[in-house]
Length: 367
Image 1 (tube, helix red, strand yellow):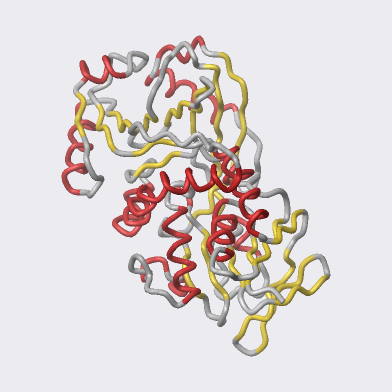
Image 2 (tube, rainbow, N blue to C red; image 1 turned 135 degrees about the horizontal axis):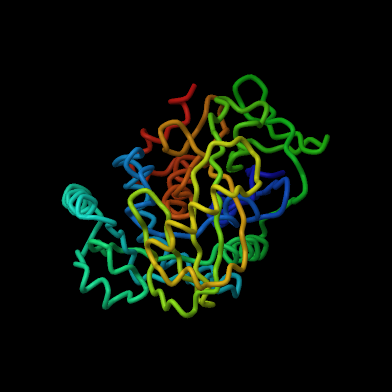
């Protein structure tokens, strides 16, 4: 008999399974494709209390609380994943630069830094910024250095899967959940590929798939937001830190010398195709930030879908049915706030004191 079934094998599902299995629960993950192959795989893996783009402002203090709490967890989590799976997820915490393209942005960034709790920050005027990151444009008006960094998401998913399997988590892939089952007001399990799997608790952690699971109450009101991205051979740039702009794009250096350039934010249904306009915008804005990009070879292009809610806050906690829990809908900053989100979701399931106020993320706000 299973204790918990988790729908979705991305970072939220894998981390939730790992956390619950460590409490002795018998856990099964059901993933319709491959683990870590959806939004997790497509992500840039940015870790920052600031978040990325204007969506961080929409999410407000509740979004900031999740990101800040997670920042403190990531270093320990990266070490634990390495020990449990033998996988180095290339976690790097050497700071994130929020750059200003002009004086108006410089003023706005510094005002936000004073008003928000981003931890220790340092304003870099143009000359200091240029000495720290010579590849960046001389036209920039400065940058705010905030705590954060990045990790390699394409190692994170496989590493978490190995860790979960070694802990005894059952992982079923290539299997679609057709319905969440309940009797009266209590969860009894799921129907997946015409088979009934029983469990008194179900966690919905399926990204954009969370919105289309029959039997879910409430139905997760998630809209897919497409992000187009590309990776370059940018060893010649020598970029050391993640570079964010106020409203995108961003640059993310990888350990192998590649630099990721992302990402568009488009509500285009679930069409994964790249567009001429999207890639053209990324490249032109990227060159504006770091002119040397023009000489870099493009190695890969892809798109992914962010599971976005109307208030840009995730659904974390119990739904309308006893035993139905959510940890989904993290939108543009899904990787960053994952550890704190999972800690909160599992605490609510276990009946433990929540580490942060759960009210802003309550799934029932959409009932």
